[in-house]
Image 1 (tube, helix red, strand yellow):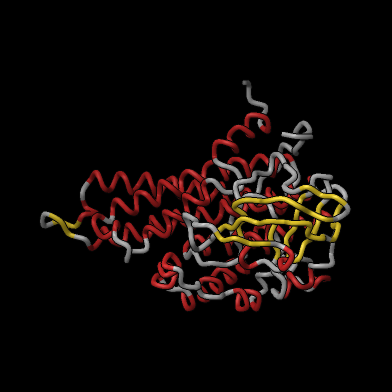
Image 2 (cartoon, rainbow, N blue to C red):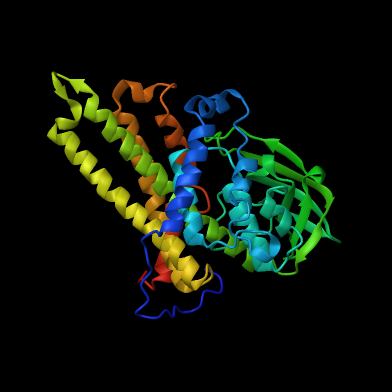
Length: 371
């Protein structure tokens, strides 16, 4: 952990984990949009090369493109705690959107860097941005991705999420500065992704000219990745909740040996454990979002709760999706059933923005654990 100061948090601070009425209204609006516009068949078709449903204009109409952008720049001025509700619903329906890469990570990077030129376009959805780092990059260290000389960038960045939708790339240069580079100056090569509803691409910079956003981009990039990790945990909790809910519903009506499958004691025990762990995942993810709201994404307490949530939810979402596939029996193994979509999204999320192992390693420093 670079530059991490000794933790100093009020001992009596307790995050408020219960959602309020406004957040539940937003949840209902997002759920309605996704259920109307995204079908299982459309998501599966993305693996055969079909274009996924374009939701961004409608999501921008709900204020989601600029959910974290201040009202003075045309955004909604909402908090990470409010935004977490959106990501829970995006976990329940893994649609293709630049919500994580543009509305959260890129937006946070720009705001932390103090650059406001792109914020109005990001707020109304007319501009989509992406941070030009591998999707596996974590908040604990920042590595320059391309060589920079006289504001011209050269080099290659692999496995960048959100690149296909981006109009602008935020690029860390070898000189420590952060640059904004228009997408037409970059060669974007899509690569085969495990999760085709959130594809990744390789970027090639060949003397591309960039606008200098910040002389010292490392802190802003860490903030963006930390905010992304905190809210990705809510998506992972949403994946787990869908898997539990759908599996329980299926096992209540599926019969085997003359009995409802869900009535077998061994199945009940597995479901009870899965449900309890999913509730813990939801609480951990909610805590990360609320602490980031109350104390700021760069606070020591926020770093701690984010690392806990990312480590726990990353592993649990995969386990929940695996259980959903197995407990659905033969139908869970078919291409037509949506269970594989959630397993692929969960597995891709598990290595995004830092693996659970990376976050646990960071916890040893954040919580001052002995080696």
